[in-house]
Image 1 (cartoon, rainbow, N blue to C red):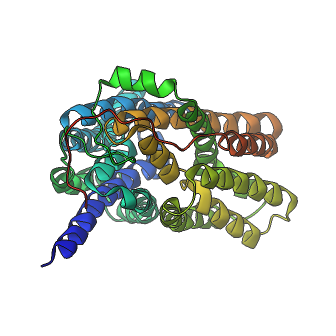
Image 2 (cartoon, rainbow, N blue to C red; image 1 turned 45 degrees about the vertical axis):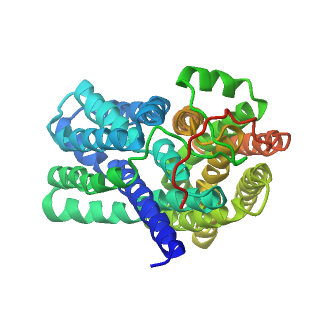
Length: 413
């Protein structure tokens, strides 16, 4: 085999490991809502108490990622991924035995969500960009992101079939054990705390997590990226949690809500791959501005359009194209600013702001509907936030910082 063939094979092995891991962890995490009615019936705690565990999990997933990223930057991604996958499996497997609110918070909100965060996008994308050549990083982050989208799309029907076939408790435990199939990927992505070349081609010397974050927070472009990602989290969580309710409030049958979510997941895969391809060809800040502007325009058109089934599906497809397509250019800019040395830590902090936005998007959707009987005011807020996010990305400088020099390098596939 030629050297080029070996490099291509190594590239796709890394992509399979990262995207496959994200597919199973994201799929397991995003399918938990299917078990909510059964958990409510089994425990008798009420939807409010059970939802508290899920809401805490949203925040904990975000809070975990900067710390998991710091561990991966220092010790390599492999150890972090193993711990994360095991915690996710344990939390999911023991959930059917929990009969109290605090028990569910620990199982779902701490163990499962924390494990999913440790095996989440901050660590997976950082591990990927360290192991491949700089010119392939855009498409690589798109592929990893699409893996999460594909997992979300394919795992939900599998979980639903398992619930029907073997019961909800056994189905949840099977889902938890299924994520352990990703353990071999931890070896593939194990990486090393010796870091390779950054965007400028110079080797980057890793610094401590605290020093890296302080440096990043002094970079105006990084701060603007974090603010924009807050908006992304608000938008994504509102759609993921409340889109079926939006469809129901339009007077459409229940099945249209399921189809809308399916379209959202399917076109999310297309959007992730497309933006990964585009990252290597256009300025990333411009792509982010266009994505947020497209969201604002799509929501405005949806508000003005007649609320028929086909309109809902078209709207869901358009939103799916932009759903998580912000991730590759955001991760790309973090790497471009600071190199791959502390990328897991720094992208983890940005993911934390995303999840804070997700908390407000999920919570505010329910509060507004309770107060007004519809979601219109959330859409208005979403339009304003999206336009603001589109504007604040325009002044972001795309030039990398001067590299911290160190004679180190890793393999680039």
